Structures are given as C-alpha cells and as structure tokens.
Amino acid sequence: MPMPLPSQVHRCQLLPAPPHSPSLVTLLCSLLLNHFTPPPATTTLYSGDIMFINTASFVAGAVVASPEQPAKLVKDQRRVVPGSCRARRGAASNGFRTYCMQTWSPFTNRRYEAMSYLPPLSEESISKEIEFIMSNGWVPCLEFDKEGEIHRSNSRMPGYYDGRYWTLWKLPMFGCSDAAAVLREVEECRREYPDAFIRLIAFDSSRQCQCMSFVVHKPPSAAASPATVAGAE
Image 1: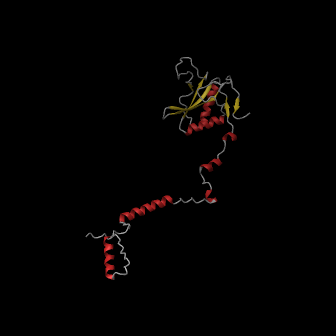
Image 2: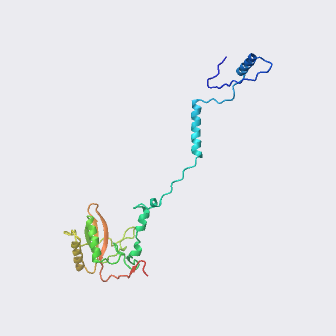
Image 3: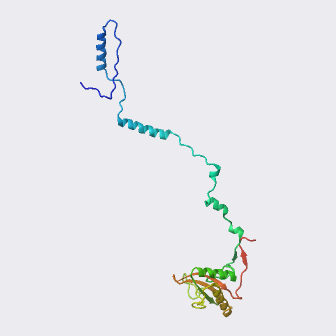
C-alpha cells in the first residue's frame, strides 16, 4: 500500500459511536473510514511555490502602491542658482536701446572691395583696427586706386569683376610694428595720392590669405551719401 506524502495532511475524524455498538467497533469504523476516505482538499506548498507567491506578492504590491509625492521645496531652496540661464537673462542688456550704431546707405554709395558701407572711420577707429591686426600677428598692407569701385569691363563670366586688385603702397611696410607706424604710412600715402581711394589690408603670412580689409581714405570728389541712424526718427 503506498504511503502518503509527508507534506500531505490527514485529519483523523472520529465519528460518533451509535448507542447500541461497543466502543471497539466504533474505533474500527473510524480507522477504516479514515483509511479509504481521500484526504481533504488541502494545499501542498513546496519551496518553488513559496518563492513564486512571494515574488507575485512583491510585484502586486509595487503596482498597487501609490507613488510618493515629491517633497515641496522650501522658499530658500527655490532660489535661482548663480550662473544659470535665468540668472544671466536678468543681467543681460539690450544693445539696441543702449547704443544705436550709425550705418551708411548702400543705395547711393559705390561698392568698393572693402567694407565701404560703413561711415568714414575716424583716426581712433583706424588705430584700434590696426591694433587688432597686430595682436593677431597679421601683416598690414596699404593699397590705393583711382576708381576704387568694382565693375565688369573685361569679362561677364560669373564670379569675375574688375577693380579687385589695387596698387600696393609698399611691399612690405618695413618697420611697421605698431599702430602709430602704420598711421604714419597712411598719412604719407594720403599726401602722395590725395585723389585716390586707400584701403588697409590684413595679410596672414602663415596661411597666405587676406583676413580683413577696410577703406581708410576717400578722395574729396567722392560723393558722400547722408548717414542714417538705425532706429532713430
């Protein structure tokens, strides 16, 4: 006869003995009934089942449980961190309101091979531009031309125009190691060619290219268009 598993639970139920039967018969009936009667509907749990139930309970608890609300920041903790975008936004100034730059009208002004749309530069502005050229290690060069404007006379092919190359004043300007020396060369070129356009070019000797160029002198015969102030009425 197969033995029941240790994990199965058998409950011995004692039936009440009839009043006309002896106690021995009652005991035998109880033993026989308990032997042939199937065990009650009890649940047998093994170690794997217990682990599965524990995992399911943990997952169910994590899903059902409501998330915790984030703690509210105190007033002192809501202050803007220095250097953040919001802090810099309040410190930024509007350049248009503080300074209106003067511009030169391009409609009545001839186009030169330089920044000709700017108003005539003062000696102080030219000196600052020369200092910028020197600080970058570029070589200042002076050029002049009678016409001073670009035109198409020799060809109509795309990208070609005349008036690109001007006559070089000195090649190179030896001894010009500061802005004052370059300004002296500009003044000498003005005295020699007063009716010519003079421009200053910054040349990079390492990359063999022209970095910047601007007009430093215009002849008196050049018609000057009225300057307009941006944003002014």
